[in-house]
Length: 61
Image (cartoon, rainbow, N blue to C red; front, top):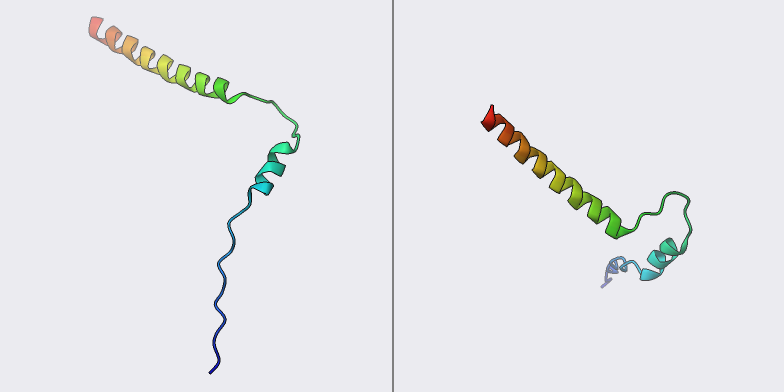
């Protein structure tokens, strides 16, 4: 009887590739994650404030 060899599943990616990726210096603008999140939250807050002010303006006129 011949047995078929089972195909091995690919191994999960090692973290070594990720470490090498972040060690490479890339040209461009560097932005801290805190600044990105802060700007996003600020944009959402300003949008909500403008919608609120626009609804008040519509009610007054």
